[in-house]
Image (cartoon, rainbow, N blue to C red):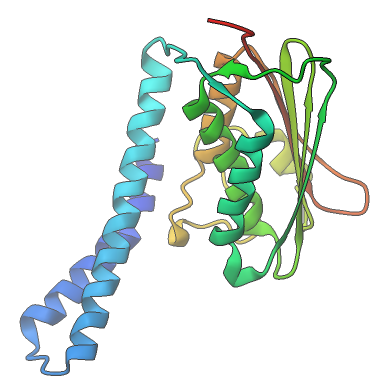
Length: 227
């Protein structure tokens, strides 16, 4: 774990150091160049902060009991809002998102769930799909709701998992063979954290490849009808 963390932090810290030294050593009169250097320093500082935050969150999940803080949500409204957010995140790739919700309950009532943790599970899975889906690709999100559980499936049109990925994809610090590096802040913790949060909700999570290509993550969460 320490080796992985050191590797993930080494690149952005080295970049910060290099650009900071350049600012100190060079008399940069060009304001655009000066701003560019500061932008690079800020971008890589944000990457370091992201890595540290994920490490702290992982430590909390592993070392202490996690309480669920239930609040009431409308599943359709929640997922529709998340889709809008994912479109913004991936707009440079012009990805297409397809959301399908099947609520099998008669009353279609609001549900009580830990919204923050549910949102984190969704974000970790979908952002991982965005990372490995090519330009103009498709991400499909399917949601089924029954009397006590929410079932979510996220499938993308990327290259899918190889067999090694399927065996290890939910492990800490795991990166598959296809261009998985820490250059974009990816540290191999997203799906591990998603798995832990799903299990805290009394659910299960699995990864597989869909027919025709692409990776899929499927999970379920228990919810409460009242609190």
